[in-house]
Length: 310
Image (cartoon, rainbow, N blue to C red; front, side, top):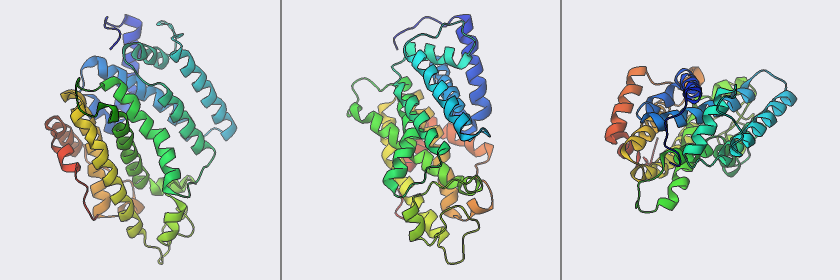
């Protein structure tokens, strides 16, 4: 942390706005963020609120050209944040909060540029032929967020292999994003989007890609989902190597957020075709339990070894 004084009243108000956005929009992440002390909780909320703004542009109803203009304007705002040109009394609370967080923590703000790049891929209707191509997209929209968050958490002084912490944070972001893709496959198809690699869709008989539901009778949709679940579990196992590098509260935050998605993945594995019937989710009580277990590190240890089969 490079600056310790308590934020001024305008900055605190900006943070409160970002925390409200996070609490309302980030139902899963909010369980983990609540486990942090106030300074880190505020900084992560600022990161989330900015990221949410970028996502909302990409997912909104505007024409593609207008979305690209809005994303360019957001990138320009990020450049002002990076140059420390956002005054504390500016009228944009997200920019004010993010600028203050960037003064206090070594946040790699280039990750937000990567996020904008990833959302531009969505706006342009990109498809992914291979896992390597999809992984590049996931690193932009989720791996970068993991690395940004690590800038707030930091690592425990003297911890072994601390230089690999950004890699593990990135991988954990990939695991969460792949789980999101599996959960939202029907919704994305309805919006004309297909994320899973085309070569893998064809391998399991989905010759029309993931745009048409229900899949044809000749398609092995359950097999496709089990294949992706195994991949996601391997990513989780690798990404959870980050946890011993974090202090207790930061580790609990990450374990709670990722643990919710890991359990969601278990639900998909148990009934792969459930994603065709509706949105798979965890009940609120289970999310709260995962947060409690995150404090004890229980779900992290459970997820650290990938299962051989779904």
